[in-house]
Image (cartoon, rainbow, N blue to C red; front, side):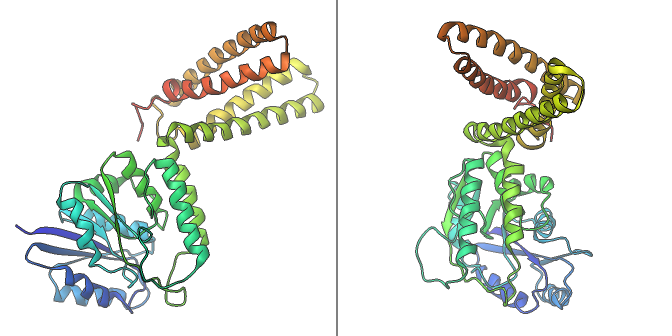
Amino acid sequence: MAIKLSLVVPCYNEEATLAAIVERIFELRSENLALEIVIVDDCSSDRSREIAQTLAAEHPEITLAFHEVNQGKGAALRTGFLKASGDYVGIQDADMEYNPLDYLKMLEPMLDGRADVVYGSRYLKPDTRRVLYFWHSCMNKFLTFASNMFTDLGITDMETCYKLFKREVIQAIAPRLKEKRFGFEPEVTTYVAEAKVRVYECAISYNPRTFEEGKKIGWRDGMRALYCIMHYGACNAPVPMQLLIYFFIGTVAALVNLGVFAALLKGSALGLEWSAVISYLVSAAVNYLLCIAILFRHKARWNTAGELFAYMITLAVMGGIDYGLTKLLVEWIKAPVWGKLLASLVGFFGNYFLRRCFVFPLMDRKK
């Protein structure tokens, strides 16, 4: 019995290449491989929609979807994923940069039962290729490196268009996807890593086009991708990365503590003790909000009041530990600064693990 491959084709103003890429996709057909092509027109302003409708009238394998407002590639892919009915679901841009025949190689680890997701990598092996944009290539590799640090995947090309999924894998992920443009790539990679599925890579060919030829991605999309790597990946990042992020959060909170303390001491009559207490509470609130926004965003177990109560308990526990340990170390090593520094290091790790395991437990994530 033939397997069925669904290829989702997001399309925005691709009248020059849409028919040609569909023709190339049909070269994949064989007695063992049936095709479904899901073309999602993202409110094109050229003849792309008309061409897609003509193609669908000629080929029953083509399914159409239309956006009445331009939303971006990520939104088009989300629409296409939910409409796909094949055993395996892949992505095919409507331009001519990628060769659909490479999907035959990408299917191999799927059919062998080794993989649940396969990425087509442009960097796995040297090959003849068109040479373009050095900094664009550097950005792709940097974003892949950053993504790997947060997902703990060792892939070589996170930004690749060619991603192949078992249908049940991508349709479980699709409802969670929020990115409407090219932030889709790091977002879906984060969710693939979170799903703990088997990920393989396969070398593919690549014929990039210039911006004059219609390439749409720019530096702003690179910055958005970096934001998405941190935004979606921080909550599931390996512990070393989470500690690094928490160090950043702790540094910001410490600066807030210092700034508020200095401002209150200089501009009010509260006195030293009240200024210290208020500045500490403000910095604790900043620390909590940054933990929610960045580090443990998807891991809040209770309602806000419950989280705050748990957070206050951790502050009291670590405050007591910090006080007792500082006093003990100062008496032991006879060096107040070093005693306080060592106690602060213990407090840093203690605060992190109490937040991770008590305030925002891993096993009770709020979607």
